[in-house]
Length: 116
Picture 1 (cartoon, rainbow, N blue to C red):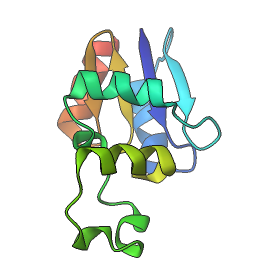
Picture 2 (cartoon, one colour):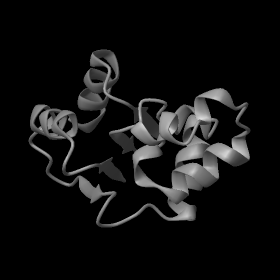
Picture 3 (cartoon, rainbow, N blue to C red):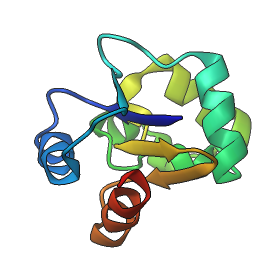
Picture 4 (cartoon, rainbow, N blue to C red):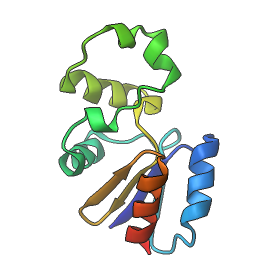
């Protein structure tokens, strides 16, 4: 399975998707119009090892909700990601049993190699 979870309105996600082309055989899921399911999040957690690794501290809601002042548990990370799409670190690239999370150059390059 090859799948990329992304946000259509995110300029960084758009740039990365363009970089990853051609995307033949890759399923794209736009997480605002098609929210991730608990099952999909479980699969991502199984591959990454934790919900925290999937959580974006850069989300504007992170500060707005005062979460930067709290000690968050794995359960909190899971609930927050399911509650609002902006808490998922993007993009998430899944290729077989490999997962690539976020937009660092190194991560995107590794994801590109795995896709092609």
